[in-house]
Amino acid sequence: MSKLGGMTKLASDTAMVLAAGLGKRMRPLTATRPKPLVQVLGKPLIDHALDRLAEAGIAQAVVNVHYMGDALEAHLAMRSQPKVTISDERALLLETGGGMAKAFAAGMLPDPFFALNSDNIWLDGPFNTFHELSAAWDADRMDALLLMVRHQGAGNYRGAGDFHLDPMGLATRRKPGRVAPFIFSGIQIVSHRLLRDCPDGAFSTNILWNRAIEEGRLFGLVHTGEWFEVGTPGSIAPTEAMLTRV
View 1 (cartoon, rainbow, N blue to C red):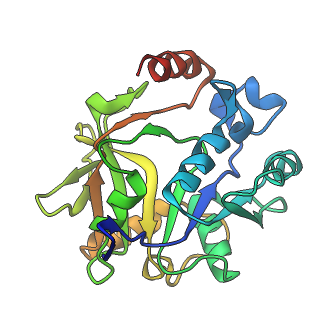
View 2: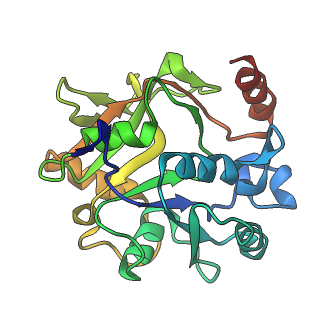
């Protein structure tokens, strides 16, 4: 962590935006477009995410593509900020962990880098989310720092939660059949150490997180604003209503 002129220096100038999924829960809207191009308030989901990166001063975005990748790549070609580089998974969908591992192996990702889902919509609290994560980032102690949301700040969310956090922010998993107070927002800082010795092919980031938990190196930061899960067609209208109310 470092500060310049009273503002936290960003932990990285690069973010990986995970945009390669099939969007099955968003059907039938994803029958004709990839999920990142589904619109909320007249703007594609991925542009909500990329605009937030640009606002934070993050210069580079690596976006992985698979389902309807040509349409997504054509849309992204119209952007200038942040600068977008495509990580091409059209031949094989690699899931979240495999997608990051491919971009890492190709030299696209510095150490550390931000990672976020392409369908994230959130409102900042008193400070910019990426600057808050950067202020909390400690490369000596952390393999990944996950932005967490409390249930009361998670619009449209109906699940049981994902993680517990101790007073120092150390993360542990929700136990089966129980409720956990914190939900992973889809936004994180990732170190190269998390990606070491990755499996080949497609795999979930959960595999890497589980190892980090065992080593005491997975941490969470609680989001101070609001966050909206936009996973199904039915979640779009409530999200739009909440966003226009604030």
